[in-house]
Length: 74
Image (cartoon, rainbow, N blue to C red; front, side, top):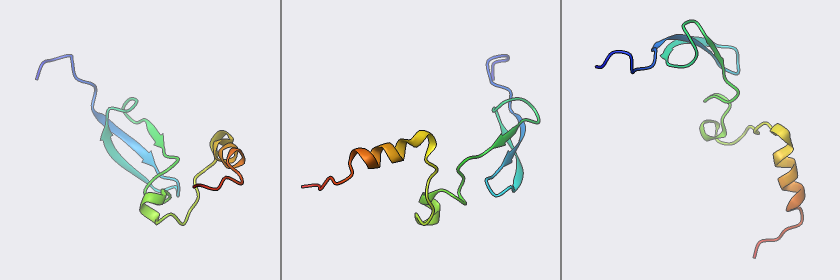
């Protein structure tokens, strides 16, 4: 390995949406940084079977639904 060209690989704390925490190695931030997740395997529809809804950040879903309200595909 060449010296000085690789990112710093260090330990960070990851906080999941339900408050559980774990330590992992990452190039994110700096040593001891905290990464708070908005979506994780306990809340993402891909892993939960789609029973939970996604957060509507910035009203994007609402705007989409309003734009295509009454649309019947053909």
